[in-house]
Image (cartoon, rainbow, N blue to C red; front, side, top):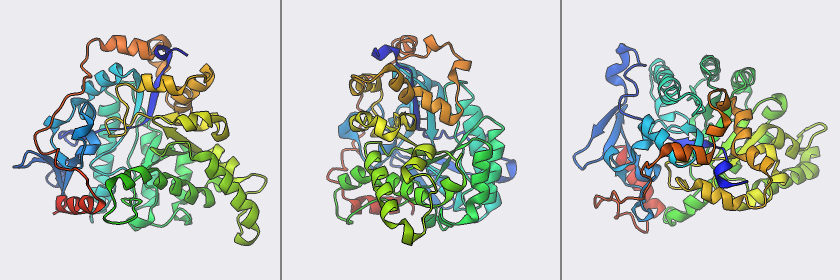
Length: 429
């Protein structure tokens, strides 16, 4: 397939929430306590909420910046690309990158909304989550129909309230709910507890995907406090593998065979070994552990219930038939530091060398459409959705790499995990 003929839908991008997001969606009674953006004396933009300061961490919004300026220091809206937080500019960036569709995870509330969930007043927390979801569905996604896969935050402190919100947002056309990869660190029952049954039932009834993003529990895979930051960055996909194992060996996918679980930002190359190991574990140990997959193997259940995604994973593409061609989606991760925007089409074209057009279409957009109830072709002619057509539409939109260094971002060199922990704790003071 020629690069310009590809149709790209990313199932894992991110947004930096704009300051006005609660203005039209939160009742007046909550306005004074709602999150607010504060511009600090040292030039950072931080959210203030419930006694905490939540910065826009640099690594979360580095699209368009040179790699030497990546870092974990706080940043301001002036220093990040407008497409991170402005919907009109995001569309321009998507067009220039040749990307038709995008599903955007949250930033300052946490990937599973745990910042809001930690508020002691759960009525207020629920109001915030509903307001966020309404803003995301109506304003972020609704501004450009056909260009986004809407995603909702959960009321993670209550299975019943999670279920109710699944049903509410499904009526608004949203069929993806972000969730933690492990509820236990958040003080909630594990995936092995039937407490979550109402939630699973709502997801199945509404054909809504459980979208699990690594890091959503707040836990990181680390080896030692003084290890280089590179260790944590490389090991991040292991969070997703751990979540996959936890869910696979729970009875949830067997009791709810129509439940769909998407694993975000974890790559795909590890999946064949993961499934082989699961099958071997079952064969050798199920008679004494009590596991019962009936006529199926664990790998069969994984292929039926789980979706994986990659940014640029040559090994995963080579092993695509071992994984399952219907179980793979592409992601761009804009505007995070792993993203390959705006050159994703060029990189994918190399990765897809020798791959059939049918397989490319499955990975780049058809699987996303099937799993997330997303149909851009109901809005646009297919010919207008290709990389080439979108880039032509973008015209001379500037995608050049530009330095935005103000002298604060060059400081974070040879960063250790201890540095990261200390800076994170300081941001909460």
